[in-house]
Length: 518
Image (cartoon, rainbow, N blue to C red; front, top):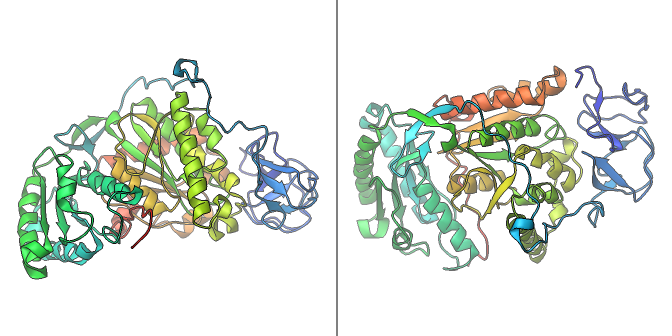
């Protein structure tokens, strides 16, 4: 990719290119010779030949929608003349392999294992997992306990003893807006149950204090009765009603927290194989550069992780919609492919029953960045998954039991999706953004990857790495992917990310609320 290019053709079968800068009417594209009929902003699409009304518009070599009307060569292609395709491209096989015998299913070639396995320095837990941070969590079962959890955390921050705990990364109150006024055994309840259990057992927490009100639907006895929360006896719980109200709960909670902190402070980082790392792959505030720079670079980094035996979690089911065939064809078995197809079908039904449609994406910010249809956005989003085979499909917050590339079902809403990934075991989050998302995800450190240099320069204090130099300076996808991979190892070993330095992570715990609030 030459830095001086004014537009990029993603695939030889495409009939549009993407502008790499703001281009004026009358500009002649260097590579194709097409003359622009109108001004086109950076990241937006330009027709490089005449496209008939109703014809498929192609990017990445695949249809991203249909032309609403005839589009001339050199015209700006966007929401005014490009519509979502109501039917999938007939050239695409969206179904998984129908072979009933898994031995007959198409199997993608795996990635070669790394010749020289690498390590990171993490916190080894008794259950065999390795954390990248050493936080103490105050986990709440219900919204009604949220303020008290914050009061306990604030009292700890004011104390003299917490500052002496130099190997503790901090106290993290985990509060949310659910836990009651819900059915006691439906999809929403089970999703919250998995989320709270996953956080309680997370290796980035050295210890957990769980606080409940006492009368909520999500009862502490039900949570702890489902199995031992932690193997190292660093789990405590109390309820506000039983303890005697706010003041007594704060006093009792603070005493418990000091005891837990003393145990947590004895933990030390030690070398661990990279196979013990689990990374959540995310994108938010995407633009048209996402599928050109940061997402494929992150995909290459993900492949490097997989080669080292680590786990990469792709999520955001509505944002792979229309591109699910890319993953289904890479499933290691027909069963895995069917699981992903089933989640897509569930989403189609779920959205329709709630008066929406899967094509309500991209968001206004995505569109300003040049994205037009959900398929275009999804094709760029799945680039985060690299080339590795898809080895598993999991429910929201379900524990990840295997290694390699896996998919966890979640909404496309970033804080909610990351919450599920962390509950499933992600100890590090890699987050690409084109518009400039700012957030953090305690207890897991988050790395922000900018898709374009202009945004990176504006938001240097929030962005950890610029991937825009793939366009501006001709950096290769592979070199940038290796740079991301190396940064992951450093962050996992204790280097602070930009979002951590800014103090993010206290407001981004968002369990998926499915079903009626009663």
